[in-house]
Amino acid sequence: MAIERHLNDTVHVTNLEWFVNWSRKSSMWPLGFGLACCALEMIAAFVSRYDLARFGMEVARPSPRHADLMIVSGTASKKMIPAVRRIYEQMAEPRWVIAMGACACTGGIYKNYAVVQGIDRHLPVDVYIPGCPPRPEALLDGILQLHAKVMKEQSIRNPRVTRVKVAGE
Amino acid sequence: MNQEGIRDRLVSKFGEDVVSDATMFRDQLCVTVTKDKIREICRFLRDEPDLAFNFLSFVGAVDNYPRTPRFEVVYQLNSLRHNHRFRIKVRVEEAEGGLGSVDSVVDVWPTADWHERETAEMYGITFNDHPDPRKLLLPEHWTVFPLRKDFPLEGTDDTPDLPPQTN
Ligand code: SF4
Image 1 (cartoon, rainbow over the protein chains, first blue to last red):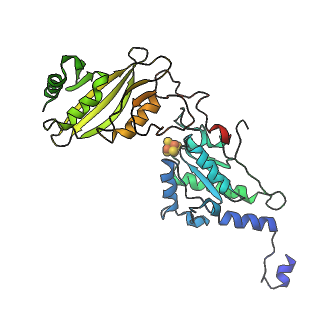
Image 2 (cartoon, chains in turn orange, red; image 1 turned 90 degrees about the horizontal axis):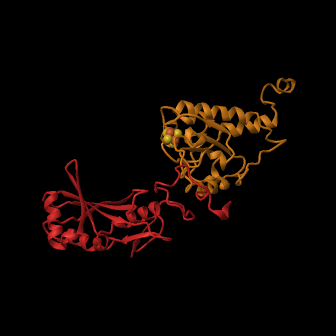
């Protein structure tokens, strides 16, 4: 790092893509959005004991237009799905999705007519967190996995484009 | 008033024929009444001062498939004034090429509104003269009745995730 030394360590030189990824993962704002019992564990992860603020995530946005991350925390009933898809479509790129809990991953204990058998039928999921419900530690681990994934993205060379899935995909 | 007393009041008002069946289970009397009279019976139970069933706890249904008559609609009554409870049922036949029906009791107890809407969408029973006969919980575009015994729990092609137009 010759140039840094040349300027008496007053600047840092880095790679732009790394820098963009680092900014994204360091202030990833989740959508304030919960579907069922798992949402309570998500709320527990937000408040002081587990303190998501440590990861720059304390601002849960009530508007999808400000949010980067949708944590699908809970059972997605079929009647709710048009609303969930609409909320996702309103989020600005780049956007990420965590499927939190057995219900969001697979439908969980509800293998029945009213529940979507996995939110990945409708949204492109980045991280799946198993558990019924997953403890806040598991959610934090999932979020850190997502951060690691974001750091590997080619945010400049190959920007991500995500869409809701259409039937049969 | 005890439950036999309530039944006797019903019989003395509407005649022997009105109670077609009565079962006692765990000290709870369950009386099956004739379907055509349900609204009059409910109004009577609500308005008599010594009965005063001023609170309808719920309306639900039972599917006795494959027995006939197939459905029973259950009314659980509660009197907040006298602190007594009473359960009445009516039998509803599955109609050929249509839905069985029973008179709505919304004009007796307004709370019956949502209970009857849920019962209607889940079992396919029509409540005559219901003021707002839309679905309550299920997606608008479904045409199935999921709490019927012959409906597969995991759903059918008629329970899609999305309404057809947004696919
Ligand atoms: S995974 Fe368990 S805790 Fe989470 S929404 Fe489903 S049933 Fe509730």
